[in-house]
Image (cartoon, rainbow, N blue to C red):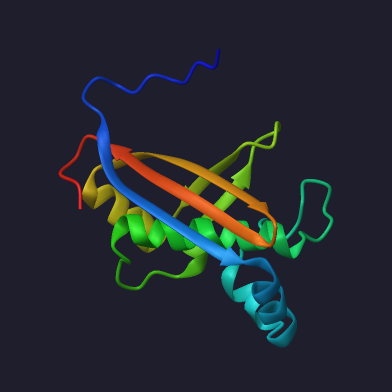
Length: 138
C-alpha cells in the first residue's frame, strides 16, 4: 500500500495543467536551433546529477512541466521559461522551483505547494502539474 502525504485540511486545488511533447520533434528543434536549449532550460536542468548532458526525452519532459505550469497559472504576463525549473531530489523525485513572474502569480493566487509528475515513453513526454494552496485561486 502506498501512503501519500496529507494536505492541510483547508488546502485545495487551485490550478491544474497538463502537457505532452513529441520527443523526436522536440529533439529536432534542439538540433535545428542550438540556442533553444539555453532559452528553455536553466543550467541545472540541462545536466544530470553527474554533470552529463540531459537526453532529449528528459528535456522534453521538463519542457512539458513548464507548459503545464503555464496552463495551471493561466500563462502569467511576462513569463520566461527560466521562471520555473524542475529540480531532482537525491532520490530522483522531481520538484518545481519558481521565481519572478511565476512565483508572483503563484503568490497572488494563494498557491503554496506544487505537485508535479512527468514521464517519457514511446516517443512521448508528458507532465501533470497541480497547484495547491489556501488562497482565492485563479
